[in-house]
Length: 361
Image (cartoon, rainbow, N blue to C red; front, side):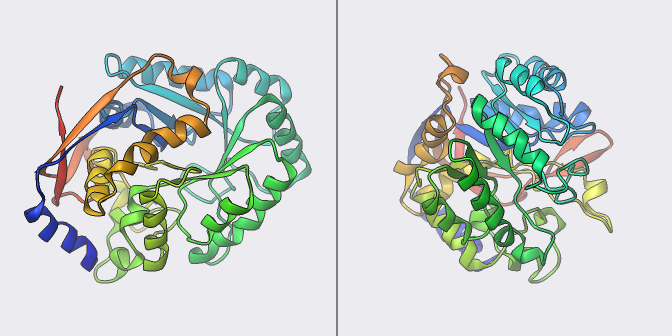
């Protein structure tokens, strides 16, 4: 791990005075819960710590219809019963969406369309071939009129480290073309993306835990760490530091989205390792630790809740939900993995000491 990371888990862990923080309605605005046995294994970690999660639709088959979204939502609600967790569903954007389906989805409480460029990441095989095609623009006109938001995994097909930057022209074209459509730059990984937030009123972003703590050197600098391989790729120290500063300042247009994306070790440790980092078991505890390290605990509530509550207009979604999560400065060892099926899922920073621990009810 990076020198910063070792110092963070070294001197800071030993010198930390007792602190306590209370978070109200923490929100994860980008979450992969998968399906079947994996859903059952990973859901409890997010449902325990978050009041709401924006659930990604890249399943097999993908969530391309309202009926599939509602079935998936019902399954999540059933499995998370008693944990006060609201699954905020998304609909997979594809060329065959029409006004009738979009109208039906909106009436059922689905407010977000998720756009995947075809082949860009896990589960994007049915994604959009050409984002600015006439058909996709027609769909987005309808979506804007209905009041949807558009979340995008924004990467080109170019050089892997420049893919997000190259996609910025698409974000900006869409922001100009649909000024009333809120557009989310998901899991920002390139510091240059942050500049677009200042240029366009309707552009917003989510930031992950791993992109504010790691650089490509952590992934490939010594031995290769497949557990740290994700898309968009973790980039340079300058990108990491800019994203960290943005998160610590609780920039009003930026929200926390874990992009927690579990994969079985049997697939992750292979010649064709899929991109994805599983951070759900540690996301809030680690964020509390990071914000405390930088003496910015006063901004954590906005980053993990208040910004999203306002930007995604969640009043009607959360209703009377009031989930309070308390943490205190007490170190605990992050588990290496969790069991799933006949394999396991590696946990981000497994085996390390986390500074802040959750106070049980």
